[in-house]
Image (cartoon, rainbow, N blue to C red; front, side, top):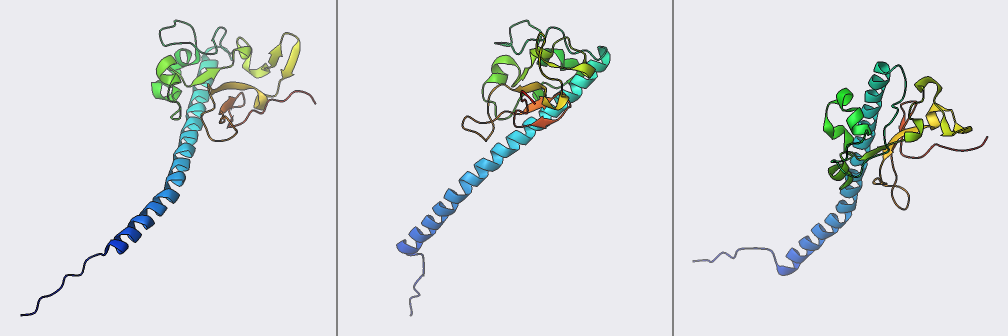
Length: 181
């Protein structure tokens, strides 16, 4: 009777396979992480566009005037102050629009990942200017940020970048505000 010898993996072959899998995982992990961060930024941009649509509905019902008394943000959900997320809630409907997926703390604490620019409070939307008293920084709607990330959660820059919703309803991951000619 002949005994058949079973052929299995040798220890060296097994180690080579493990090393190859580890190398592939080392290459794939940063790519996956970058993809997740980019998808968070894209979702944040979508949320800012929805907030812009809600703001347009608000303006239609309020004689094309920006809100008079909205604060930049609140310290906690318990504070009873007029802010973006409470003022636009009737026009947007879902609470999740105010949460940036890259935000790990602010939404849970305050109810919004985004902040309002109170320098535009009470201004007519058609003649919007950004400035202090008689000192006008800009009257170009493409350079007037209305809503922005509370922190730099997105890739880019040393501390991360923020997304901005501008008065012309465009959204961008950089500040377009500039002073001077």
